[in-house]
Image (tube, rainbow, N blue to C red):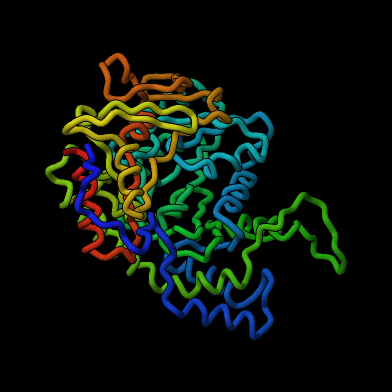
Length: 420
């Protein structure tokens, strides 16, 4: 229970969840684009960003696009998804993972989450293939920069002849068994959105080892122009190519990727140490097989330490209780001190637009509870699937790598006060 008479002072400057960190070299490449008049969707910055992505990630081809969502859309199209085709998708994720399936007329089926990494549950995926053996495309994500159980998921997909679209938008620089994420799917995507580990303010990248696929994406992303002296079109195309100006920012950021990851990891470790006596756990990862990029530090409150919390579609309420707290209370409390946090992604099967879609847990088919629910009550009131449970009890902590250790220590104490 937060004490309104707290001695903590409001921060003069806002502590953000995860804001861009600029270093100066970015402006030099933007200036180069300006001075050489390469301001459109071709130029040296784009070429260099594609080269740097291949070099860092370990893929053969990279195509710079306007957004990670554009990259995912191109991946879905390459995978041959047509109207009415069912596609298995991670459930606990941002809508951009799923929406491109719908762009092509596909029908998402959501696969529940497992607690070890907060990513797609291999057991639920296996169950889904037993229920829908015709599915040939799986879209999986690495949530908050933490690699999924890739070997297990890939083995299941291979067994059923399905291809993986790897949404590595949040996990640039993360590794699984020493290999970079963004290299495990047949089609792979990363993002340079404003709050990502490195940024261009926007932008994304399609990654592949197949030259023909890369060339198709280059063509489709520039309005599918044919090789003719005039504008000749034989396919539907898109205006998805990255700007050379945006690419200049990303080009300047690439050299700082490892530094940003180290800073994010230090933030994660400080939270972990600071919360060791609280009834909470940090977002988990498989330390034996993976190294996250620690993009966002998150916590989940122990079930028996949750105060009562009610969430509707757009509003939430809670009842303060001594020794307990909930995500709503913590987020409202830190906001009073000019600090930004965020709820965990609301699972896709709970979203109004997708709640009537099929949803599979490791125990079989399930449906979202479309009514508001009360957390922290009796056992009977808390029959949640894993993704819903993580959303209910979890939150994203301020993870800005410009936040000082002193500022973070104050935030830790403010959050501790919510349990007093």
